[in-house]
Length: 182
Image (cartoon, rainbow, N blue to C red; front, top):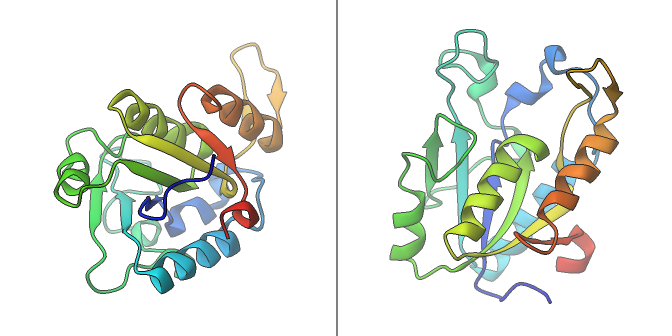
């Protein structure tokens, strides 16, 4: 089932912080281009758009204030009138005005794009679904990084991404591709 025409495009952490080499190898090399395509389509239709920016309180975070990582990536830079929600945790709903923003605009469906799939994207999608929103996550407009688990096993970014989306699919969100939405 496709999202309704009035679903909000929710851009999560489309910021320069994810370009820092400390994150390691990433998947989804076309994620930014797909985010830009979706953002252009939402703007052309006059459909709702909400940007979420992470500003970390962790001293070593690439998202901390005063660092270049807090700046928007060009593909997801807000334009005048598009709301910007600042978060300090992986959830875009925790201690933010996001839910009120969505309520005020009568939005009950979200199309989620951005970074990092198994962190802020997955957390926000889960919370949104738990709060009663209908959620779509765009597979090729999200991305993550290689991870090593507690046992020392290395997981590729593609594997982490696929598992995170599998965790969401069905119960919390519908997983779609950019071309399906356009």
